[in-house]
Structures are given as C-alpha cells and as structure tokens.
Length: 311
Image (cartoon, rainbow, N blue to C red; front, side, top):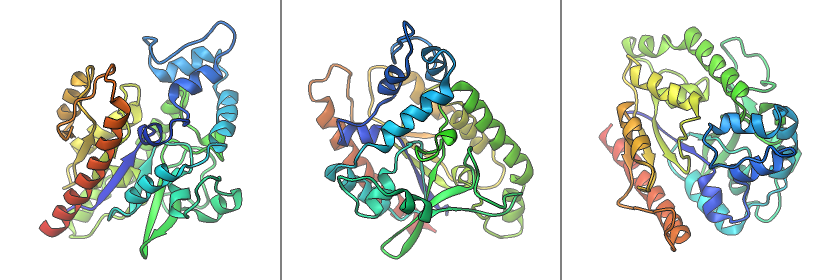
C-alpha cells in the first residue's frame, strides 16, 4: 500500500561501537571554561550546545566534524548496517553526521571512506528551484548507493561531517531547517493530494516527501523532545489529507520513556518495544540493547514484507 523507509540514529553506533561519539561527548568537547554541561542538565540539547560553547556553535561543529570524520567503522557495526541497507527500502534517512552507512555499503571496515568517494556518490534531486547541490541545509541532497542491484538513497537529514556548515545541532540551526522544511511543503505539499486524486504516485523530491508519504521505521533514534523538526514533521504527516504511511518507533521500554511514547501515539505513531524493558541501572544494558537492535531489524523486515504482500 505504501512504500517504506527507515530513519536511524546514533543509538546504533553507541551499541555496536563503544568508542563512538555520543551527544554527551560532543558537549564536553565543545564546552569552554566553566560552562561544562552534560545530558543531565535540564535544558534542551539544542540550547546546551549554545551555553557550552558560549554561542560559538559554528566553530564547535567544525571541531566536532573533524572528530567524527576520524571515527572508523568496526566490523560488527558494519555487519549490522549491512542488514539495514539490505532492507527492501529505497530511502534511508539518518540523523548521524558520520558515513557508517556508506562505508558498510562499500565494504569499508577499519578505515574511513575517502573524500573523493563521498563526493562521487553525492547527488541531488533537481526541481522546486533546485539547480545545484545544497550548500548547507540538506533537503534534496543524498548519497547514492547500490545493494543487490537496488539503487538506494542515504539522506543525512541533519547534515554530515564532510561539510560542517551542514551539521544541524544548535537551536538556531534547527530553526533554519524547520523554516526550510515548511517553505518546501508550502510550495510542493499540495501535490500529494493532487497525485492521489489523479491516480499517480507522488514523486520523492526530498527526504521530507519520504518522511510524510512512506511508512517510516525509526530505529536507534531517541526522538528527543528537542528534535523540533521531526516532531513538527510527525504532526504534519499525521495531518496529511492524502493517503500516507505510518511511523513505527522502535525503542525498549525504559524507566523514563512513558511520556515520550504516549506523545508519539498522540501524533499517530506506533511504538514497538518488542517486549523489551531496559532500565538505566540494568547490569546487562549493553547486551540487551544489542539484542533489541537485531530483533528490531528482523521485525522491520517482516513488517515491510507483509506490507508488500498486502498491496
């Protein structure tokens, strides 16, 4: 009935590569003087980075981009990303700044993908005023890969580390991204219903189109309350008048997830815990998350196969 896409986050890196850079690491690396902050501070992370850098987010992201670019994909990590890439989806959305997916697709392990390779697989979808690659905020720019003869697009929806000016993390940059998303939908969003009325398939011209129109399977992305662009888009998806897919959110039940899960359901999402409960003080937390991710990708595979059979 609907095409399927996946949206992944840094939780996968943290589970399969203990040396991966977390948000807390970025905050600590970016902090200046006595403005040390952490994930436990009671303000959104989009503002933590502003406080921690004394509002020098741009230069902090240049430094962070270098750190992320230096991270090497490990074997177990690459094998798992290979499973994700093999899912029957054309569009893969990621909030990660690194190139773990591209490296897995090109069987690169223990070394980083070359700059020339990154450039050679970068492409963009023309139309809606787009005549060249976007300089910073990426709505139409993607990385093209192939898996088992199927062409796929990897969308770094919050930018990537080879272009630090594209990396969305501070509150100001999230605002710019949301403004661009809303402007794009004002220009082109009406074609979703037009396509349905005229018995045509709405084309994917941006990752925003895939998010709204497709079934979206979310894995390894915590849907933090500060992610204002994706909360806004989830409600925009929920309000879409044309027939559209659903968002499926994969996350174990934890000791502080109830409110978030309830809010996701309010916005039309389906939360799938797969029967897992993992509390912060669980002695087997790391192993349980790893097992959860393997069970989740199997569940996504079966779910997509069922949707294809039902068409």
